[in-house]
Image (cartoon, rainbow, N blue to C red; front, top):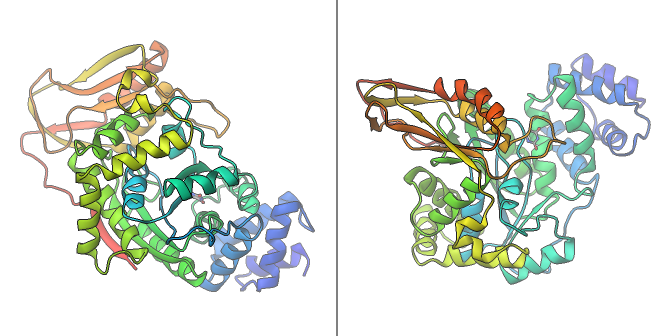
Length: 435
Ligand code: URA
């Protein structure tokens, strides 16, 4: 079938055969039979007409097979990863990876960089001086054998079709499409050589999916398509209206992760990290039920075993282990300013999206994939929804380098919270689970 016939078929709402999908994925991988404008035309047709579960499952597998699929079967133990659809202050990977590994899970974590208002695990890890996220395959395997955890970036040979298609979607208005998001996320996860995946699908102001209904549709698609491809997949839907924890920005998030692994973390971050690590432990077959899994993870946290794994991971990947004890060895912003409460009252709202964008404007994130970042800058939320503040009390501590960037971020920060006479109702973090 020619590219134009495949485009016409989808344009008219037809179902693509596995052969047609393979042809499209070959076109995205090496240009074979497809011009770039034809690839984008098919993306738009899929955006408008959708894909059936079986088309999405086949697209996912074909995209995973477009590059190297790791075979980790020679490393003993169940291999399970977690993937989050992205949020503000979401540093759970740095905490749950070590916790799950301390419980016996092998965690081959391939992560991305931050884009837009949401942070990325690789950028956070690179705030630790010397930490190498670019391990080669044999170094990655050694990390998994020695520590049970490896945290790296996707190499260029993982799902190359997704690289082309994601870049095209970004500039053709076809990012927000459930089958394409599903195939994009899962193709890269399947290529990691894992047996199980816990998906944290975030919803709210600070998330990619703004409504719970949309997040649920994405979560169901991820679970269905992952499972159809032989990957045990479960999803949790979690709220992302307020930043997770109190620290937003790369160095700051490393510090909050270390504090959490030492048992001194904020309750929301600790609770979610423990919950996700426990789901990984259960998916790995290392606990019979949720409560046993939670107990195991809690023990790894309370005994310091999770912290030990993180320390060994940092050493294994070339990072400065002393930086985990002495935070002055991490990149530090030269200036600080404070956003204060204009009156006494309860913090009733705090929009995660605005805080994420502010951190990006300060230099902590990137607007385009090729931009550099400043690890040192960021925001500490000294007050969060439900807490009472007095007039003049600090809401945000802002760590910055450039006054011009601070001036752009400040109006957003000043508008990102509201104060009320009564505390707001408590909001649950875990909204729903899909298995
Ligand atoms: N993350 C991805 O990896 N792909 C998408 O399409 C969306 C989010």
